[in-house]
Length: 228
Ligand SMILES: *Cc1c(COP(=O)(O)O)cnc(C)c1O
Image 1 (cartoon, rainbow, N blue to C red):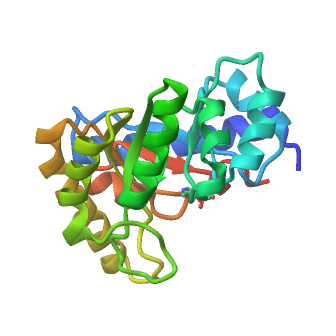
Image 2: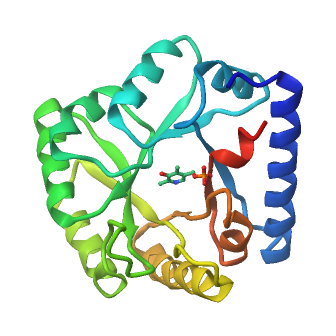
């Protein structure tokens, strides 16, 4: 559905206000970046949010990302890949030149990405995805293995620049469980700051305030912005 500019403005204002409230509650010094996840919405709405000041957009499928990068070619947008990356889509993703891939979920994927980047003479920034809720349906590295794998990627993948971590909050009605998944991820992020990590990507429409309270500095929000 294509939304009126005023509707999108109201949704955006509310999200920004909520981010601001949670951010200040955590720390005046915390800076939180908003990535608009546009996977369920129309290109027109992306253009409108661009006019309203947004620059960072995310998609979870390479195919749709490609269509949008092409359709919005004339706008100076920064594209994020937030979804699981299939090995056979790696070349295509690299050619789209995203600003950040949030979903590096195994050492094998990192090494495959690095190999293709090397052959193209390119580099790419990414986050290590952590399965902080231990859910079988979610991809990502087990929390206990995260630090070790992060360092292995840094050592073995010179064309892939790790910038931090990403997680999806626990799928639960219980706030305590969701909080634990975020806290677990933040602890890993804190330890990785010594290794150069600067991004802790966590929080979606339903849980971004909680994620920021737990230290997130990058939220990925879709449905809340596109409510009609
Ligand atoms: C879809 C998606 C989001 C945004 O989810 P909403 O609940 O619509 O805000 C964030 N992160 C990832 C990885 C997603 O796939």
